[in-house]
Length: 185
Image (cartoon, rainbow, N blue to C red; front, side, top):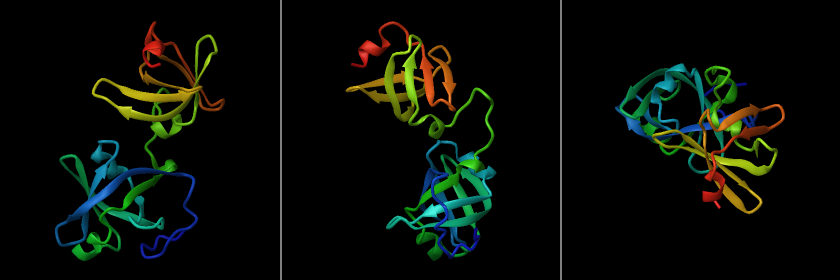
């Protein structure tokens, strides 16, 4: 894979996850401000390379991260090959992608959202509720949206509800409290 920041990388495809967006340039030396979708801009300190997708079109390019720091809820990055404000302005609006393999290792009972999307959700008696269509975060906990059979369920992602996540089988087993599924109908 080429690391030249000026060449497209068509071989990048299925193993990518969007993690943020470039909101604007920072200063005159080519730094960029990135809004992190995980709300953790400090995570960018761990990334050696990112992939940017141009705001118009779908071309993606690989960039090496030279420096990273936080500024409030944003990450400020210096990328190889981006050395002027004008070059940084040209990247404004680009989506920031990361290879799944480059995500930090998690503990055995932790999962990234992209690992849960698309998994089937059943209750402990084996009733299929649907598949995880999306997730979002609240101050209390994450919520997974399960869609299937004409219903949409909002299931809190907490240890007392999620009983088992089997990525190999593609199944999440839940034990919802009484009434949770009924209030979602």
